[in-house]
Image (cartoon, rainbow, N blue to C red; front, side, top):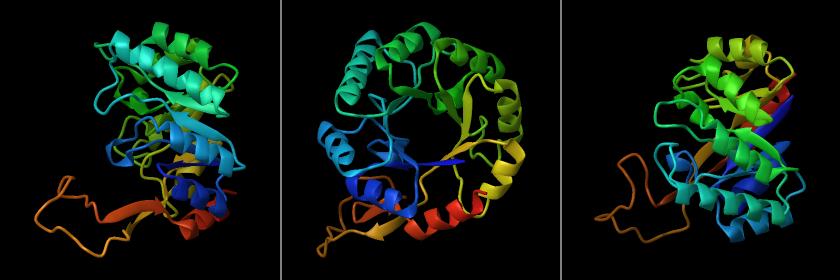
Length: 243
């Protein structure tokens, strides 16, 4: 079984590797589901990590229905990831009616090769998961990251189990969202998945001593005076449970 950890900083990537992750998904802005990481972050993570690196290609926050200009940005970001040593990219595109944007996804898959390609949780926002599965397989993608179209992988475990059975060896189904040491065994046992995706993160205090309490940059549930990083002990515990 393979453990993929999602991270949005160099420190988090190093912590994930130290905890035993076999692969990381690198992004920025985890608080909004992740965006494409910066050039500097990608380069430094690739230089300092020994494990495979998947790069999220998501040009903006919000939905997964992209303009032609946004599509071109995604293509350029894929080329940059390829040129800078990434082993894979993570993409996802939908049409306005909720179907998979198969034509443009296939074009991005072809741009990415020989890198691995994961179709991300845009799948969970698609109209019909069974048709979406077949459409994504037709694009040549290697895996689908999914919560089973539910708020968490545990809540979506029934659909995830169906998807794994339907996919067979045609594509990898990788459960993700809300997975932790308390539920990872149940999810793996029920789905029979061979790869799993999580952040195993916790909030730690920032290095700032002075706080401007009258201002905030984030919504009420976030603060600029804390940083989210992987919990090495949680990763180690999850690894022990993945047997």
